[in-house]
Image (cartoon, rainbow, N blue to C red; front, side):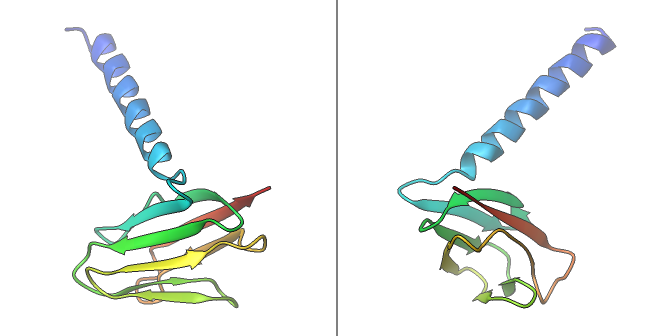
Length: 110
């Protein structure tokens, strides 16, 4: 195989993985699922509609938070699930107060 072929194949695989990740962020039965694993929100950016539930599943062995500066906060113990019902005002950036390098974004669409 040539290097050009491998690069195109890697690009296609990377695109497929990105699309699969994007599909995971879509609502299923009115719930958008985010996994917390290896000190990261996966996917980090989600788009929801007002009234949909965002569900964070913490797969790490320690607690995390979903913290909106000057706003709300959700605490998620290790191995647990926490939820938040999105409102029209929830287009926000968030982070983990315990691990500030963990960041995410919620965009609420019309």
